[in-house]
Structures are given as C-alpha cells and as structure tokens.
Length: 330
Image 1 (cartoon, rainbow, N blue to C red):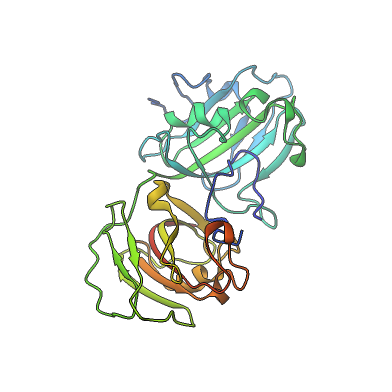
Image 2: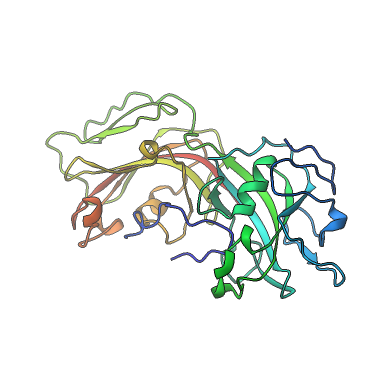
C-alpha cells in the first residue's frame, strides 16, 4: 500500500482493483474571500526556495500561530483557477508549527511519497483548510496555508506522523495541475479491422466507452496492447503520475467491472508503481499522452488464479481495458 503524507485524501483510485484487492495577488500578498482568512506574507512564517523545490519554512519565535486558517499566495500561477470537484495534483512541504519540526515533503528523497499527490477539491476527505483556500488559487501557484487543528486533523491529530490534536500546521503547496472529473483525450477512433480483438465504441469525450468481445474467439494467452488513437503528446516514463480515463471488462463474462467514465471520476496512478496490476505497466510501455490504448491482460498479468470475486472477476479470467492517457506529470 502506498504511504501518503498527511494532507492528501485517500479517495478511491486504481488501487489494486487494479492491484488486487477570486483571488488577485502579487507575490507575497493576497486578498481572499470566503477562505477562512488571509494574511500578507509578513504575518506568516517566512518561506524560501524556488517553486518546484522543497520549501524552507522559518517559524518566528516571537509570533504565535493564528487561531484560524490563514493563507498567502507566494507565487501566482498563470493557469486556470481551481474549482471544486476537480482532481488537483500538488507537491507540498509540511511543517509542524507547534513542534517546530519538518513533517515531510513530496520533494524529499529516500522516503515517501516522493511523488506528486492527488486529491479531489471539495471532497469530505480532503483537509478543510485546503478545501477553503484552494478554490481561490490558480494552477502554477505556490500557496502557504497555516491551519489550527480544526482545519487539518482535528482533536485526533495524525499520530503516525507525530502530529497531535493540538498542533498547528504549515503547508507550502505547489499546484501542479487540475482535471475536471470527465476530462478526456481528443480525437476520433478509426474503425477496427482485426476481428479477433474486442470491439471498442465511444469516442473520447463522449463519456460512454463500451467493449464487446469477439464471438467464438478465445482470449490470447499473452499480453496484447494496441493503440487505437495515437496522441501527439510526449512518451510516458516510469515514475510519472498518469491521469487516465478507463473501462475494464472481463473477457470471460463480457461484463464491465470498473469504469472511470461511468463514475465520472478521472483516475490516477504512478506509472511503473505496484499500485496497479503488472499488465498496465507493461502494456502501456511506449505509450504517449493523448493515446487511447486497448489492453488484453491474461491472468498472469492481472489477478492470477485468485481473481477478485468482489468485482466479479474469477480466478483465471482475462481482462480487457481501454485506457485514455489524459496527462503525465513528472
């Protein structure tokens, strides 16, 4: 199971099912409305370090932590303003004001998570302080948020990270990207000519992708991968966070067992990680941003002899996926 730094929600992802189981500012100042509070940078702990690198946070010894959520935009991004319901991808540095200690950072080396993190803005399992501040922020921004326990983990704290229920926290957040729930690739799928392959219908953006198994054809015993739509983006590389839309169907039953399209919830995982079945990492090798890929995954590269009975997948079943690669973030 992937370890997360505190502050990122653990919403339903590709987790093994697929793995077996109006802010206007200049730098340093900010005016926010409806976000619990705002401050000039001078009123908050000083932050140094470039955007895209771990922040250094200096807690002043003569300044008490605020009693409510306070925030400041340190770097104004030129992207779109964030909106509730979007999947937001961030890097961040977290410091405990009360204990004057660094809790962790997505930029750290040799620890976890060491990767950009993703959450749904406005979701009930996202920190209240993030939900209140970030809808006023644009993609590409660096934001400092100082929050009392009520805006973070409440009276229970997050003891596994050494955070008590009385600790005030400081987040420095770099907003990397934001994705609407139904965001998809572009293009039109050409007619399929191989009658031995499952037939895919539903163009990108339609929100309705279906997969029909060929009649009288046995599933292949080795992994098959076919690009149905070729995107114009860069090739994906190991360690990147992929933003994808997908549908999964069991070849043996013809039944759909999962679909981000149907859920209206863009999905994400780190390419090359063990948070998905091996067939995804192997089958997407060489794929590009903007591609639509058909994967036929034999049980050896999926759930083997055990299957996932709760999803209707029996042991030994072959799985078929259509995956749209919306974006890849380093």
